[in-house]
Length: 163
Image 1 (cartoon, helix red, strand yellow):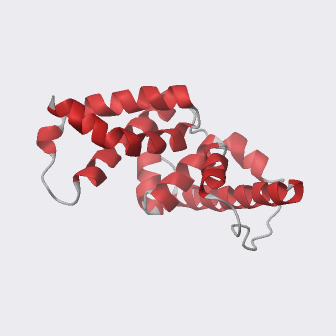
Image 2 (image 1 turned 45 degrees about the vertical axis):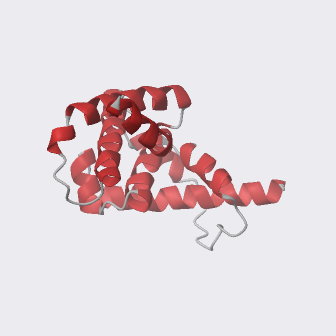
């Protein structure tokens, strides 16, 4: 009964976290289920430092990262090649774009870009923390973030042209 109440309380907040990392609904549902199993088995480790939701969110982020590692989706060399051809106009492209449109663009980022972008911009991890968690260098983390931003800016430009 208590587990269902906890699930009902957190599911609508954790599912978007999962989908932002993997970009597809079915995989996000699997990750969310795994995340809840982990959360329920580790409930006694919550010490009360900080919010419960923040603690739970880390579990779901780590579950998504484990999924990406298993799929070997964090290899970044392919995405680095793709990014070399992107425009580097850094002007603000975020004006007049809705939240749903932005989230859709974030989920369509190449995996390495999306992972670092989510961890840095949305979750608030430092480049050192990201590097440690993903087993990459801090420079790679910074580069992936920079290229993710450029990729997003270019996609927003395309959307504006098509509108």
